[in-house]
Figure 1 (cartoon, helix red, strand yellow):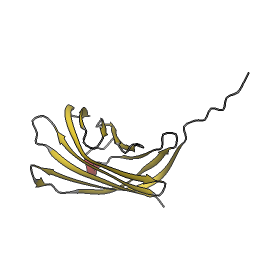
Figure 2 (cartoon, rainbow, N blue to C red):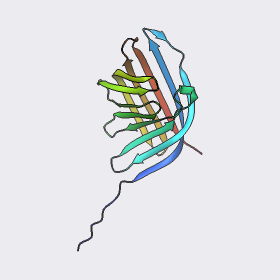
Figure 3 (cartoon, rainbow, N blue to C red):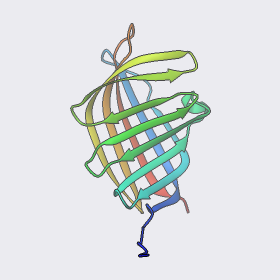
Figure 4 (tube, helix red, strand yellow):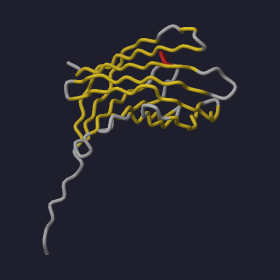
Length: 155
């Protein structure tokens, strides 16, 4: 009987410091930017050459009990997943209009997201992720968001 050498998917993770800045505006009115720092994980999926930044949300975001993961794909898209008290699964592609649902403690919301910008550069040394998008929720005004994450290894 011939043995085959089967290689497992190699994922390398490291603890990181994540600086997050979220700027939002509604009908031209700029809202107060949300800036905070947290710790999380930076994981490299060597098989697919994809990088994932993940962290636990806190009281600062109003989503305690939620884990957020942003996966930068090799083709430059960002797969944004929230699990826990708030659940969301969105693929950000520049120019893409995405329809989804977001599960919150208050119920299920239909959402529509138009992605304007997706930029990312991650490596073992950390890097940056940037998303620009507009979020529409029925019976509410459109919210435009610019989300920037800066990631650095925890020392």
